[in-house]
Image (tube, rainbow, N blue to C red; front, top):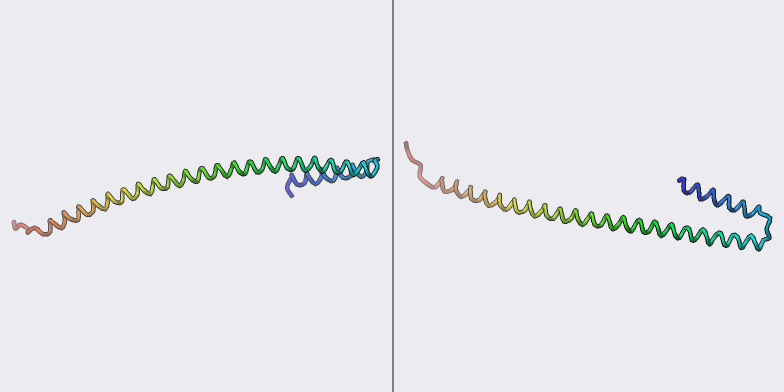
Length: 109
């Protein structure tokens, strides 16, 4: 078990032993148990809220970074596409020049 769970279990066991062994009436003991349960629930609600906030914050950061990466990938893809278009046009031009050169009669020396 994790350290946190062990601590919670130990605290609960100590609390239960303390209440059950205390010299109080049943009614007082039940009221004290109810009060301690309410306090524990309040602390757990607080912790759950903190964890939810931390998770929400982490998710927002991850979303922002993912959007940034997507934009960067789009820019890179556009750059690559533009370069491919330029290279294609250059290849066509060179091919045309080569084709023109083969159509002209060769000179005899």
